[in-house]
Each structure stands twice: as C-alpha cells, then as structure tokens.
Length: 133
Image 1: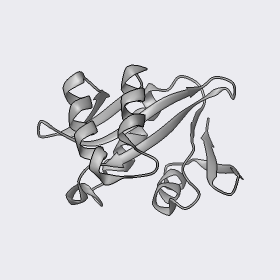
Image 2 (image 1 turned 90 degrees about the vertical axis):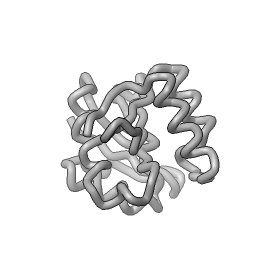
Image 3 (image 1 turned 120 degrees about the vertical axis):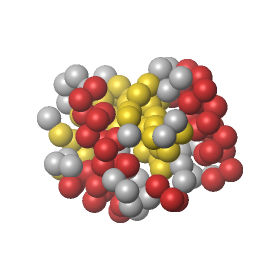
Image 4 (image 1 turned 135 degrees about the horizontal axis):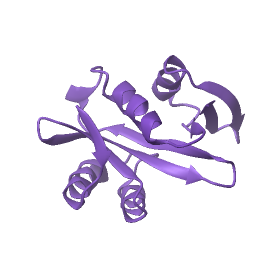
C-alpha cells in the first residue's frame, strides 16, 4: 500500500466511488472541495485507489485534522487500510494532528484511540475532537 496526494485520475476514481454511496461525512462535493484545495489523499494498492482521506488545516485551532477517511470497497475493510492511512498521514502533518469524526462513527473513534489519539471533547452531540501531539 502507498499513501499519496491525489492526482486528477485518483480524484475521478474517488468521486465516482463515493457519489452513489451517500455517506454523510464523505460526499462527492466534499471530495471535490478537498481536491481543489490540494488536501485530498488516497491509499493505492495494486494500481488502484482503495481509500481516500483528507488533511484539513484548522489554523484557528492550531492543528491539522484527518477527515473523510473512507474505504472505497467493502472487500478492503478489516485489512488495516485505515490504520495505515492514519499512520502515514501523521508523517505528513507538521505540528499537532487531530481528527473530528462523527460521534456515532464508533469504528473511526476506536481506530484513532488505537493509534494513540485521545478524545478531547464532543461538541453539539455530533462531533468528536481527537488530538495527538
């Protein structure tokens, strides 16, 4: 597996994969915005995009947030793709690294905790903020 910034070809593959899924935290519009702002990353394996994730600078709070981590095909779930992406993204981030999963996204919350992130707070009953220095 490799993590890299999304190329235009990667972006198109991700856009077509997420568009029909109707995932509230990873929509085609969000993917387009992340690509246009140069913050879209992909995990590739065997020449194919298997996951997407974004690094969003939260300058007003002083950290960079891991957002919209999405495994594109169920066949790749349970293979450590998400853990790989989180570990690799931490190498890219300069300074504090955070994540803001939905409060009901238990899988992502457990993944972040297993990677050493700690829950700082939950706001609006919907979002969590996890941090790692």
